[in-house]
Image (cartoon, rainbow, N blue to C red; front, side, top):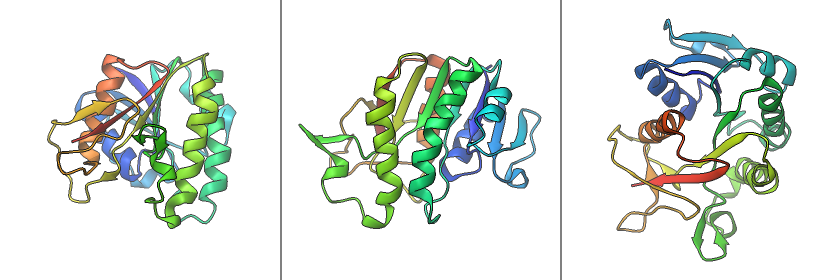
Amino acid sequence: MANVVLIGATGFVGSAILNELVERGHKVTAVVRNTSRLPKNDNITAIEEDVANVDAIAKLSEGKDAIISSYNPGWMNPQITELLYSNYPKILEATKKSGVKRLLIVGGAGTLFVKPGVRLIDTGVIPDEIMGGVRPLADFYLKTLVNEHDIDWVFFSPAGTFDKEGKKTGKFRLGSDDLVVDAQGNSHISVQDYAIAMVDELEQAKHHKERFTIGY
């Protein structure tokens, strides 16, 4: 059983990760903007805190086995770009300040390669209306995380799309830097199966200071 901090535990991805963690008996300190949205469970400690508060996040993380970040200020938030650029480095700073050695990040698919030398973010297929949320996370991975050597981080990129009516199957493939596609060329995963793989990584720690990805 691990004792972890989960940032963004009420979001689309974060809530799925929270459910998977609790189902497996892990203890979770859930850091959210609104604790009333969290389920009641003896293994969940609800904390209402701003991720921009480095000292507070560091303090509540002390002694924990890992930090999982599913931080997203909201795709419809007009400040999403500014907040992602500002707050992801602060999450990294808080992790290092806390003494926690392992940081698992819900990454983006934008930096995955679709063919040699071509990343998804550069193909023109990502809609302009979400690029404000895609680009900052891509830059954080490419410009900051890959140069981070002091803690054991992972950046877990999802497939190209999350299945809207997804189910928990437990059957998927993992990859490294290339977009995982199925026989029809589609790249997709359910949020429930993504959560399985994230908690598997927490428990088994197969990736270190690197990115990995998932797909059917």
